[in-house]
Image (cartoon, rainbow, N blue to C red; front, side):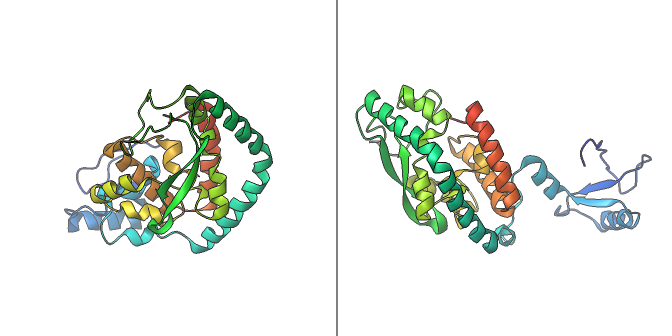
Length: 274
């Protein structure tokens, strides 16, 4: 439906201009019998009826939570067959890519040790598949003891981030140790980013359907990351979850490949880094 002009129809009558598509909010509570007859007549005249909700989903790349009712989450069930294929592809990709990335990882570890005190690699508990906690591995990009007061959102120009940390965050090098998480089966290359339990407990009470992001394995990169970037605060997280739900609903090889291509672009542009 690209390059099409939209005409607002306020009465159940066809406009003088010829139309190919009729976009309708099929879930509207005030859709009268008169409008239903009009929609049926349009369909019989070979006018394609398009659900406004699905069109909005395609244009935004998000499943709008406010329009998702309690009876619909079943449509978000990912393919079991593709999940198994995805696991195999993850292992093969890690094996093939590792020889090129290990030298970068080792060089970065040395630079981190030279820049500031503390371990170069640290572990942190995150919530993953089926809501189970696991230890995620990351290169340290902040000064030691930066979260002694508890988990916090990163902000632009965050003073806890070291100068080298800003670079490795922008290039996503700090995520390289998570290849070990992939081998262990905790994570996938592509999937929703795992959050700390503190944030998960908070968001579960504030964002409907939040737990549905845990029915697939978390990833190093994801649909939300390449479209939105880093989310700080409840408002941005709400949108991030809508991207995650879109990913789960359209869980497929083609979408994973698109995310892979967008991830490469993200690395070179530094989009969403904090």
